[in-house]
Structure formats: structure tokens, C-alpha cells
Length: 98
Image (cartoon, rainbow, N blue to C red):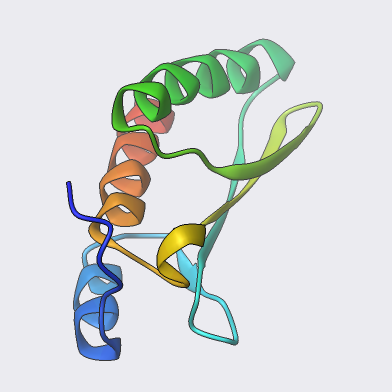
């Protein structure tokens, strides 16, 4: 998948297809907080995401405290958001849902 920075219109269109994700104030990242029932579920989500991120060669900025996982996605080498960020966001949403 391309690491070409998306323009503002493409970012807004891609973001419209995601629930719970917000655009950072500078427009260079998307953010979401996932809250699970317990630490085990949060850790399982992070494990599934880590495996998917490795396959994409695209890794999230994230933190975990007990059952909460804070996520920030952007493509550092593109200086903003790319299709990879939205692909990983969709995968994370699927992992969190099931």
C-alpha cells in the first residue's frame, strides 16, 4: 500500500468511513480510544493489531493502561496521513468488535 500523503479531501472522506476516530488538530494524524472489559481483552486487541501492523510494515503510536488503549495513527515518513493509516484503523476496529 502506498505511503503517499493524502490531501485534506481524501483524509476527510476516509475518516467519514470510520466510527470513533478523530482528526488531530494539525490534520496529520487520527486518534481513537478503545476501552475493553478488562486488561486481557485490551492486550489481546494489541496483540492482534501488532501482528497486522507487522504485515503492513506500519506501526501505531499507542499506549495501554489497564483496559484502555489510546491510539494515534500517522505515517511519519510521509509527514501525515496515508492509506496505510486508514487500513490499520479499519483492522483495529474489526479487532475491537470481535
